[in-house]
Length: 213
Image (cartoon, rainbow, N blue to C red; front, top):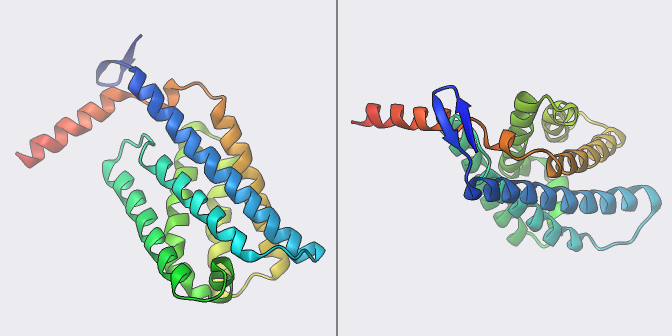
């Protein structure tokens, strides 16, 4: 099917559609793993559970991989912003690897008890917030409008030590719930809007080539 874009006509290929499916699958994987991990944390803290926090490390790894897949398949018109979000994710991954392998405590416990670690690990969550912001801006989604501020509020609040534990748990629960809502709504959304106006991508690419020549 041929679409009329801002800078000319364009077609959506099967590869474009598969890219969107992969993007949404990454979001779903990240949302599910985050929801499971958050449930474990909240259950342990509020109902006296005895689940080993080491179980959260593979869940966090899956969560990070899901975000990474989504960041490498998302469609963002501004190439510099897209690369910046990918770089943020990579910095967060490297920081997570360092904290996860140079401390004897479970990874999540290390991050929680050493708030300054958020200055490294938090880059990946900044990248995730970028996805939330993009979706809020492009699709006016209520859940991403809430997620965009709540993620930095939770992380920076913990970093600064100004959030009571009860509020941290509330924010975590809201985050996990709305992330699942977001991922499920994306799963049933029409595919073309996620691809965007391909004529804009081509125009921006041609402008970069002109500047480089």
